[in-house]
Every structure is written in C-alpha cells, then in structure tokens.
Length: 130
Image 1 (cartoon, rainbow, N blue to C red):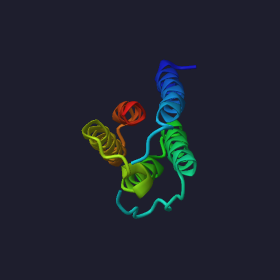
Image 2 (cartoon, helix red, strand yellow; image 1 turned 60 degrees about the horizontal axis):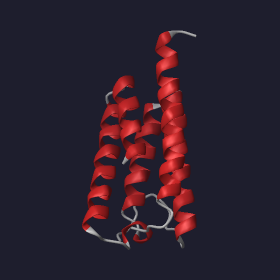
Image 3 (cartoon, helix red, strand yellow; image 1 turned 180 degrees about the vertical axis):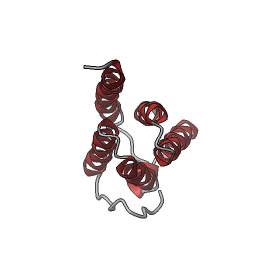
Image 4 (cartoon, rainbow, N blue to C red; image 1 turned 60 degrees about the vertical axis):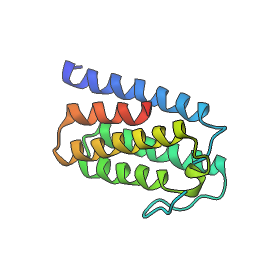
C-alpha cells in the first residue's frame, strides 16, 4: 500500500476511534436552535446516534475523496449543532465547545470545496476532537 493511501486511512481510523470515545463522553450532555437539513431528534440518545451517523458518513466520504459528500456531511453536522437537543445546556464551556465544533466543521467544508485531501483529513480530525 502506498504511503499516500496509508496516512489518510490511518488518520481516519484514529478519528473514528476518537469520535466513538467523544460520543460516549458526551452522553450526559445536551445542547437550542433549528436544523436546516438534519432531522430533529426527540431525545438525547437518538441525537447522539444522529451525530455519530453524520460523523460516519463524513468519514466514509473522506476515505473515498468524495468532496461533495464531505461538504454535505459537514453542513449536516453544523445543522445538528443548532438543534435543541444540542443547545439545552448552555454553560460557557459548552457554548465554546459548540463554537469550536462549528468552526471545525466549517473548515472541513472549505477544505472539501477546495478538493484538498490533506486539509480534509485535518478538518475531519478537528471535527472529531471538538
């Protein structure tokens, strides 16, 4: 396997594990707003499943360099951040975490729009870690 393929795949694997760990660590939290494309979710568990599914779609698109799908999933993640189930807790730290998450998703969208594989890998990792 070439080095150009191994590095992105390795980064994606690390990001996937981090996403799963991040999702589990966020299970006790909820975040208010309306979503544009992400469907509203009724409860916290369903919301976290929606967030994980969006992250998985994003990871799959990153793995195959589907830049249009990366942009769509980035927008879906931003839409999810506007939902009531995400916004219910509005502590200053949680609001900063939300701002960091949205900034990372916006970076991912810009990187995908530029068809920049390296920036997309960095952007996806930033989304997962935020």
